[in-house]
Length: 282
Image 1 (cartoon, rainbow, N blue to C red):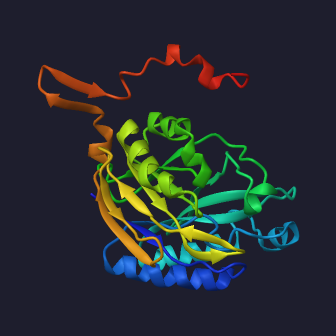
Image 2 (image 1 turned 180 degrees about the vertical axis):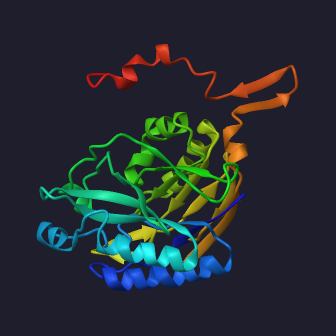
Image 3 (image 1 turned 45 degrees about the vertical axis):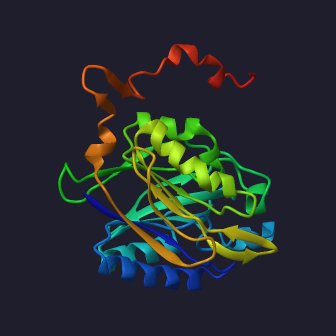
């Protein structure tokens, strides 16, 4: 079992230092609960609504100063963390990114592939790396956790999560900034992504307002059957806790009536019939 947490809080625009202090406090609470992996929201360090000049002035590389602070926090608390971060590359490109950091530094990072017309996503570069799964060492091969990352709008594209499920993900995390208008997404999408891939699925959203946009909270953890394990409110700071058993996510064969009713949503696929999905002209 992996002791897991999702943190929903009110991040502050352009206040990376203050947001890191808040993350440190929340990780301290997680450590007291025996948490091994904690997920925070998209743009958790910077806020979402930045001008191009503001974004370039506060973006940073991965690894970089903020991931260095997170590494120290992970060492102190004995946890791994996933959080949104505004990444700047050596050639000046900006990416809406998420970093997976542990006690020994950056384990991996992801760059958001699907960009809506909203906030810094309007000026960010679309992600240039395929979806990937990382394994977190939690002591033994049996307790190692395979984790996939995507961000906010990516969760509206079922292909994103299916790719990571096919790569062996036990858990897919979605750091997000869901604003007003995303309520139905919060209601149904996390449970559906978990159910259709037989994986754990976790959403970390924020609360509060920024530049006139209100963020709806509703962070959630779902199990491989699509059941909600924990869900946060719409306007409260909360930490959600759950236990994740990788063996449950890895057992794709669901036997409802032995010898009469079996389901395997991975093995029963018919990829040869899905051609238009990968046809950019479809």
